[in-house]
Image (spheres, rainbow over the protein chains, first blue to last red):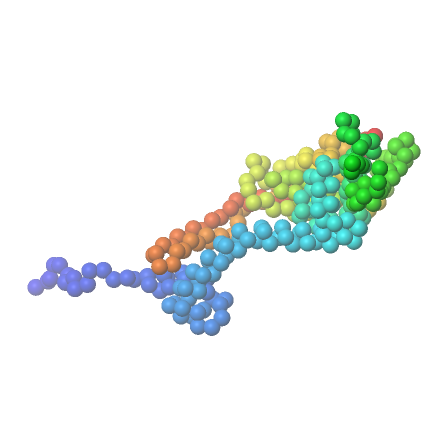
Length: 149
Length: 155
């Protein structure tokens, strides 16, 4: 007699466990120690690696900007200007170069950077002269000397 | 008036050069640079271009990769218009903030349009059974800068 319905002792079995494990281990193959081979150790390491990479992608922007600023500061000090003076005077002269490009120019185009530093220096001096004004006393103020009577 | 610590400013006194003489000197320099450009006495030109909301320092035969889509087919020639700075070995032209379109011409060609490598974005809160993993592929465009040309129309 042929049994028409097969006995179902087991409802369903996981058949692709190997590939699920490989999905995690493939990101851990370059790690050090047992966490590149053993799934239990690899799960945590891979998760931490993903989190660190997402966080680092945000922090990379801050880090690179600080690096550019350091480089521009060093280059402008070679030409006798401090970084805040250099950047503010360049901005006041309507030169809209960002820090990345300024750092690249400071490394690869020293003559161009020197001319930008000279431009910033000249604008700084003009700013000082404008701040001093005419050199006359303002009206409506009596003399600065205070008489003690 | 008596001299105090505030009579003179804390910065050293500077004297600017005579404006008339300076204007003459400036005109001379501009004439010289114009002649140099007209005669073609420059080697390789570099330019700083504002493109795709970023600034790039480019020369000819340069490859540039943007992290977004460009509405141009592969092989299209593109002219980049926002040029901030152009320089050669002996002179630089600094734009305030941009240089004129009749002064510089930067041409580029679209080479390929691909997607970036699959970047993984993971969020995880410990002890809360919360983790999300998203794989992001950004569209990228690669351009090759063909030429940078300058024309002698300085004044």
